Structures are given as structure tokens and as C-alpha cells.
Image (cartoon, rainbow, N blue to C red; front, side, top):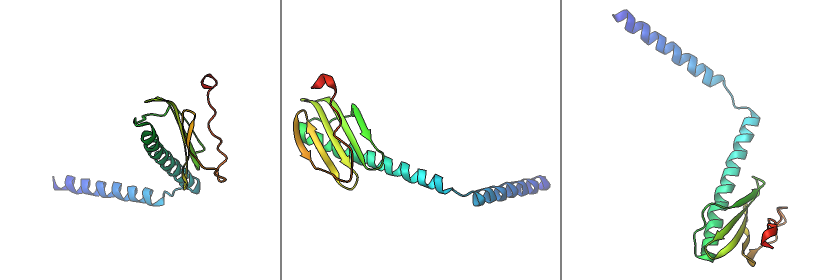
Amino acid sequence: MESNVVKGAIGFAIVMIVGFIIVGTTRETQQEKMQGAFLQTSNLLSSLALDKCTEAVKNEIGTHPYSPSESDSDHVKYVTLIWNNVGSAKRAECRYVMDQGITLLKIDDRTIIENDVAATTAPSAPRPVHHQ
């Protein structure tokens, strides 16, 4: 009986040692590190844009906008969010630029914020033909 316990303990120790060797010798490549950083930046940008733009639209309209109807982004520098039929507004558009905040806020045909940003080449999102 005692020999089975010893054999089990030795087997467990061997499995643990092999596991530590595998984990210790496995290295993340530079490309994997860059992909991870890109995904973190993209996720942060999208979260910030959604939080800040939702708050700005709510302050202007008085109604909390939920999921945007449309979005556009380069996943690094800017995100443009568009909500259709939010409260009393037919269309709300908001552009958030990393490190600069909200650079465009339009509710229907009224422009509340419009900052010319040289760092981004993102044009205002085109309006659908049926809304012109």
C-alpha cells in the first residue's frame, strides 16, 4: 500500500516537473506580443468611445442610447458611433479620438461639437441616402 502512494507521489512530481519545463521554455513571440497590445488598445478605444459618446448623447437628448446602429473605426486612433431613432432624435453621431476625446457630436442636423483633428483622417460618417 505504501509503495502505491510513493509511486503516485513520484508520478505527480514528474508531471509537475515536465509542466514547469514546458511553461518555462515556451516564449511569446514578438508578433504575439504586438497582437496582444493591438487588441488591448482596440478594446480600450472602443470602451472609451462607447462610454464617453453614450454620456454625451444622453446629456444632449435626455435619453440613454443603447447599442449604436452603426460604427466605424481604425481600431487604433478613432471610433465613430451612430445611433438611429434615439429618444427625440432621428440620428446621433459621435466621433471619439484617442487622447483627444470627443471630436464630433451631431444630433440630427445640429452640430454640438466639431473639432478639426489633424491627427486623424477619419471623415464624418456619410449619411445614408434616405436621410438626406
